[in-house]
Length: 125
Image (cartoon, rainbow, N blue to C red; front, top):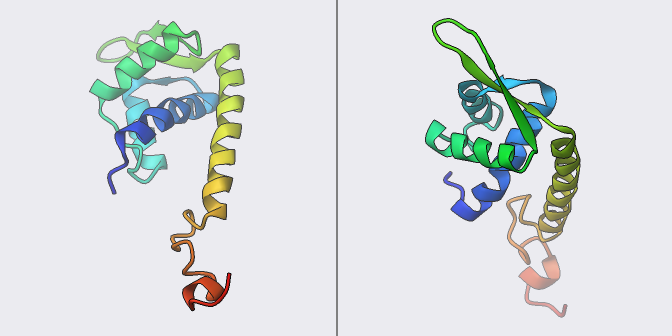
Protein backbone atom coordinates (compact mmCIF):
# COMPACT_ATOMS: atom_id res chain seq x y z
CA UNK A 1 0.00 0.00 0.00
CA UNK A 2 1.28 3.46 -0.90
CA UNK A 3 0.79 6.09 1.80
CA UNK A 4 -0.30 9.60 0.85
CA UNK A 5 2.62 12.03 0.69
CA UNK A 6 1.17 14.41 3.29
CA UNK A 7 0.66 11.60 5.79
CA UNK A 8 4.22 10.36 5.23
CA UNK A 9 5.53 13.89 5.69
CA UNK A 10 4.13 13.82 9.23
CA UNK A 11 4.90 10.18 10.03
CA UNK A 12 8.47 10.09 8.75
CA UNK A 13 10.10 12.49 11.22
CA UNK A 14 8.23 10.97 14.17
CA UNK A 15 9.31 7.48 13.08
CA UNK A 16 12.94 8.63 12.87
CA UNK A 17 12.76 10.22 16.32
CA UNK A 18 11.22 7.02 17.70
CA UNK A 19 14.03 4.88 16.27
CA UNK A 20 16.66 7.24 17.65
CA UNK A 21 15.02 7.05 21.07
CA UNK A 22 16.37 3.50 21.32
CA UNK A 23 19.94 4.14 20.17
CA UNK A 24 22.26 6.15 17.94
CA UNK A 25 22.04 5.16 14.30
CA UNK A 26 23.66 6.13 11.00
CA UNK A 27 21.67 6.99 7.89
CA UNK A 28 21.63 3.67 6.07
CA UNK A 29 20.83 1.90 9.34
CA UNK A 30 17.82 4.20 9.77
CA UNK A 31 16.63 3.43 6.22
CA UNK A 32 16.86 -0.31 6.91
CA UNK A 33 15.14 -0.14 10.30
CA UNK A 34 12.31 2.08 9.04
CA UNK A 35 11.52 -0.42 6.32
CA UNK A 36 11.91 -3.49 8.50
CA UNK A 37 10.12 -2.33 11.63
CA UNK A 38 7.20 -0.81 9.69
CA UNK A 39 6.89 -3.87 7.43
CA UNK A 40 7.78 -1.66 4.47
CA UNK A 41 5.08 0.92 5.10
CA UNK A 42 7.48 3.69 6.11
CA UNK A 43 10.20 2.61 3.73
CA UNK A 44 12.10 5.55 2.29
CA UNK A 45 15.21 6.06 0.28
CA UNK A 46 18.30 7.92 1.35
CA UNK A 47 17.31 10.84 -0.88
CA UNK A 48 14.23 11.30 1.31
CA UNK A 49 15.84 10.46 4.65
CA UNK A 50 18.89 12.73 4.55
CA UNK A 51 17.01 16.00 3.96
CA UNK A 52 14.71 14.95 6.81
CA UNK A 53 17.73 14.33 9.06
CA UNK A 54 19.23 17.71 8.14
CA UNK A 55 15.90 19.37 8.96
CA UNK A 56 15.60 17.57 12.32
CA UNK A 57 19.17 18.55 13.10
CA UNK A 58 18.54 22.21 12.16
CA UNK A 59 15.60 22.18 14.59
CA UNK A 60 17.94 20.74 17.24
CA UNK A 61 15.75 17.63 17.65
CA UNK A 62 18.70 15.39 16.79
CA UNK A 63 22.48 15.78 16.90
CA UNK A 64 25.14 14.03 14.88
CA UNK A 65 28.73 12.92 15.19
CA UNK A 66 31.20 11.30 12.84
CA UNK A 67 32.79 7.96 13.69
CA UNK A 68 35.51 6.15 11.83
CA UNK A 69 34.29 2.92 10.25
CA UNK A 70 35.36 0.54 7.54
CA UNK A 71 35.40 1.38 4.64
CA UNK A 72 34.55 5.05 5.43
CA UNK A 73 33.43 7.25 8.32
CA UNK A 74 29.75 7.17 9.31
CA UNK A 75 27.61 9.99 10.61
CA UNK A 76 25.64 8.83 13.65
CA UNK A 77 22.47 10.58 14.78
CA UNK A 78 21.03 10.70 18.27
CA UNK A 79 17.99 12.21 19.93
CA UNK A 80 18.53 15.47 21.87
CA UNK A 81 16.60 16.51 24.98
CA UNK A 82 14.53 18.80 22.77
CA UNK A 83 13.92 15.84 20.44
CA UNK A 84 12.76 13.70 23.36
CA UNK A 85 10.22 16.35 24.34
CA UNK A 86 9.04 16.65 20.73
CA UNK A 87 8.67 12.87 20.51
CA UNK A 88 6.47 12.82 23.63
CA UNK A 89 4.25 15.53 22.12
CA UNK A 90 4.10 13.86 18.71
CA UNK A 91 3.31 10.47 20.26
CA UNK A 92 0.36 11.99 22.12
CA UNK A 93 -0.85 13.61 18.88
CA UNK A 94 -0.63 10.33 16.94
CA UNK A 95 -2.42 8.48 19.76
CA UNK A 96 -5.21 11.06 19.68
CA UNK A 97 -5.53 10.73 15.91
CA UNK A 98 -5.50 6.92 16.13
CA UNK A 99 -8.19 7.00 18.81
CA UNK A 100 -10.39 9.29 16.72
CA UNK A 101 -9.92 7.18 13.59
CA UNK A 102 -10.64 4.05 15.62
CA UNK A 103 -13.86 5.58 16.90
CA UNK A 104 -14.87 6.15 13.29
CA UNK A 105 -14.15 2.52 12.47
CA UNK A 106 -11.30 3.47 10.15
CA UNK A 107 -8.59 1.53 11.99
CA UNK A 108 -10.62 -1.67 12.09
CA UNK A 109 -11.07 -1.66 8.32
CA UNK A 110 -14.84 -1.49 8.70
CA UNK A 111 -16.86 1.16 6.96
CA UNK A 112 -18.76 3.55 9.17
CA UNK A 113 -22.37 2.41 9.19
CA UNK A 114 -21.69 -1.15 8.09
CA UNK A 115 -20.99 -2.13 11.68
CA UNK A 116 -24.25 -0.67 12.98
CA UNK A 117 -27.30 -2.85 12.33
CA UNK A 118 -29.57 0.20 12.61
CA UNK A 119 -27.68 2.12 9.94
CA UNK A 120 -26.94 -0.86 7.71
CA UNK A 121 -30.55 -2.10 7.83
CA UNK A 122 -32.04 1.26 7.03
CA UNK A 123 -33.82 1.46 10.41
CA UNK A 124 -34.21 4.56 12.48
CA UNK A 125 -30.99 5.96 13.79
